[in-house]
Amino acid sequence: MACKLCGSFNQATFATEMNFHLPGRAGLDTGPILASSKILVCLNCGHAEFVLSEGELQSLKSDAASHDRTSSSGEK
View (cartoon, rainbow, N blue to C red):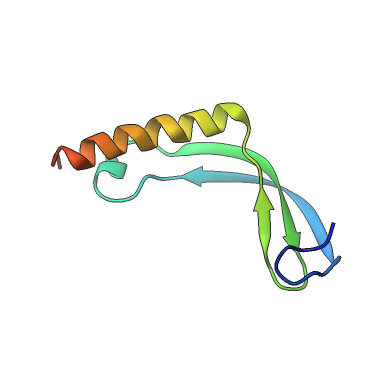
């Protein structure tokens, strides 16, 4: 598959570990969400893509929804 950004076939897959943090002050009260995935990197332009597992995606959705409720209620 060619790179979606530049069309190059010069790509490689790497194992990764990522920490997701929610933005703003409310994000400081929420621990990071650790995700392990494989990332496809274009070695020509640097464009990268990855897919989260269903469990990691659900954790992000849950924490983001909680963060949105806290942010919209004006809590600090």
